[in-house]
Image (cartoon, rainbow, N blue to C red):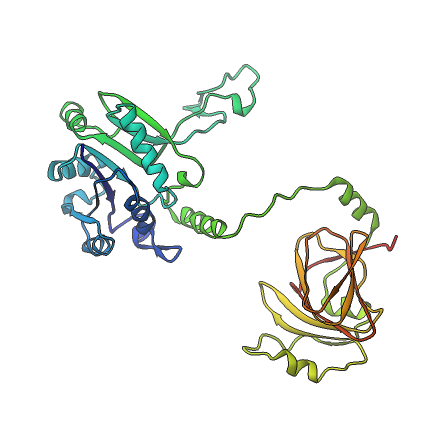
Length: 383
């Protein structure tokens, strides 16, 4: 049995210009499905099916094949049945697996499981779907619920199964028979039809600009290391609300109230800054601050304070911050527990935790404070 993977790819697209060539995660959109398909253990060959020679270059650079469809099969009037039939009439195959370039998050594992499900079930047509378990209406009439009865929990509703379209599979003999009989074969016509559920990001299909924005956000989310879930803590929130006295966001005012009177916060964002040169010109016997970086992403300020000096007890509701201890020692209080941090330590402060830091030891202590210049400080009573 010969199983061929086909990636249809027109150059023109009406809703997103040159969609298949537009970069997603620094490669053309079509590259994502190529990468997944190339690692499949079932596909004997992979073709890009297009009218545009640029896709031939992409195919050759990936070590896969190119099938040039005629111009008439590029028109909006040409249906999937038309170019699929044209392809199987020219390229020998027993099973055709269609893979959409607009589904960049489909994995090799899902492609192989899709093919396995088709073969094991002896299905002549295989359709990728997603499950939606929520009340659905068609032509103003309920589909999976009764309008005059209480609705069950969503997990008990009969799922609606919209096409995911990312993956389609056809036995080519049945495909031709359905075309001869119905002039349509995409949905299976006569013959056995199986359904394969796609989940999570694999269901994403890029049709318009908003879909591209979502896909770009998914790429960035996937790159970030997973973090443990965080939950609203009722006791901690009530404690903070009870203790909260005021909120401040002006950094210069905050520093002055913390006893830091010598502040340079506006000479920032130089391409190269030498910390040793900065420290050389700052006093060793009094407190000061010098901001180095300040942009829309973050702010970094060097703060020097004398033993016994520090900030006031506070927390941040919407921002995590961190400090790097450059010199000396500090007593770091967090949620009522105090520990000593010293030169070389990095301190991470998760949002909503009450904290303060006080210079200790017998000499000036210096730290880098990394946050953002507009972060709200919510101050609490000392009890």
